[in-house]
Image (cartoon, rainbow, N blue to C red; front, top):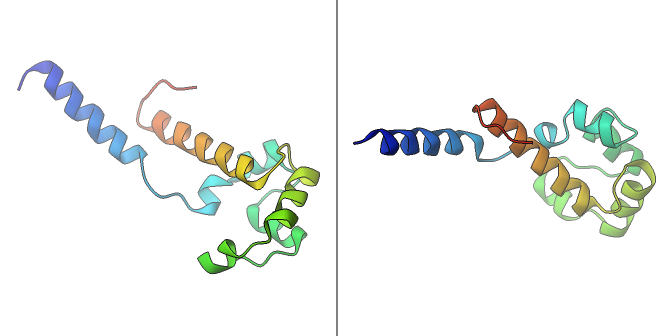
Amino acid sequence: MNNIEKQLKKLEKKLKKADGYASFNELFNLDFMRKYTDFSSIEEFFKFGGFEVNTQEDYDNLPQEELDKVVREKTKFKTWEEMLHCAGKEEMVRRLKKQGFDVK
């Protein structure tokens, strides 16, 4: 195996470590919530909106229009989908940086 192949294998391992599942608390961490919302936690956000989210089923059944309304009123986003996308992107960047990648 030559040097380039070794570097590619090492890169592949780092990317696999950066990939994967992220919990709500990882996605919507304290820094994210303070930067983009009027809340310090995702639990506080859901509680304010009157949403009870303890299971995947609870999450799947959230009333989208009501959720988007709270997002518009109390965050820097227009929709829940936009907020979720931004949180996912920031978490991936954080994980890549942790693996030594120079990303912004």
